[in-house]
Amino acid sequence: MEHFICCLNLRNRCDIIFQMLRLKIRRYIYMKISCIPRDITGTRVSRRLRKEDFVPGVIYGKGKTPENISVSRKDIDKVIRYHGENAILELSLNGKEMDVMIKEVQKDPIQGTVIHLDLYQISKDQKVQVYVPIHLLNVDLLPADSALVRQLDEIEIECAANIIPRNIEIDVKGLKIGHAIHVSEIHFAQGITVLEDNEAVIVSLSQSRVEAEDVEEDEEDEEVEPVLIGSEEDEK
Image (cartoon, rainbow, N blue to C red; front, side):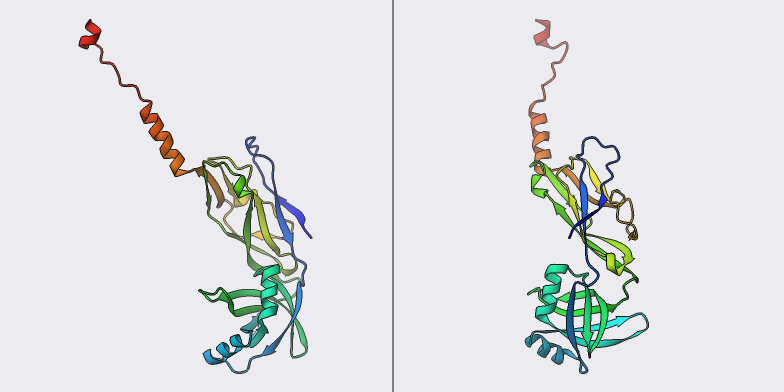
């Protein structure tokens, strides 16, 4: 379910069409998954687990002794595919339920598969700091002679675990050449604190280098050679 909970403050710029920035709000618990304790650690054990389609991981938290675990690859792939790498989970371990969020995902640099997980135990009203990915919409509708410069891929926020947005969607179709969208132009829902610099540029639009060079060449071609006053041709 989508909620429109933030908007772009256009600062009275009449040359940009009013847009809405959409934040998809996650339910507190996305999925319930089971894990098994991992008493023996080491490279060999981790390799064996991966061959058996399990992902090794660790659970830690404030005042909690870290626990080594393994999770079904099928389960964790499904979580990340549908709910992102900031997903909130209800984890079952040795018959006990706990709420955790994915804190870090390590992937194989070649295959891109998940090879290790860091899970952080939380409570429903606990404030956490996370990075929310930015998704740009309608990039293909920008002028053909423009170049989109993306400077931020994610925004760091602090909020209760149950209102972490899955992503921030920014519609850039109204962005004009020479303009930019800043962090300060995003209005989040109550309870979410932005930790990024407000003046940081998320994305800007400039004229493409090829087009700029073509314009310069055209201007040079159109230059008229000056006539020298007092030349022999004038005296005639």
